[in-house]
Length: 157
Image 1 (cartoon, one colour):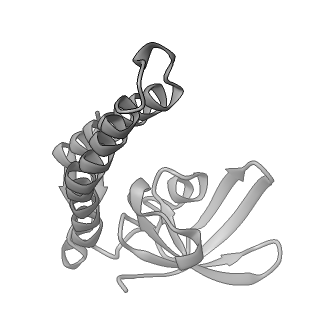
Image 2 (cartoon, rainbow, N blue to C red; image 1 turned 180 degrees about the horizontal axis):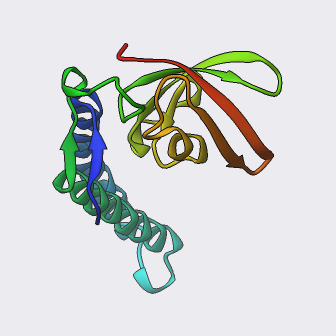
């Protein structure tokens, strides 16, 4: 797995979720299996099969999260330069076609949240903005067509 970039907040959130899955999640999965096992013949017990499948999915999710934590690199916003668009920078853009301004903060994939205007550095817009400087025009290919953005300002929120 390649390196994933997270803020301290994002890293702490994943660790807390992982801890919850390991404790509460595993306990609930074991209880569901025990309850289904008590209902008789395991060879024809759909509840038992479903509980075992759910346990397998839980373990797969735990393993995936452990891998993410192991490959995580915590990025400190105070160490980020605003000379060009980078992870954790906030970018004020003007959509050249409709002359409308918008701001996005570039974050790692797992912290992206469009409602909060946080976009992933691996998204089409994120990729198109990375490395650009104030005053540059970023031409970005999106599923809805090409969009030109003028980079107005780069800063740390």
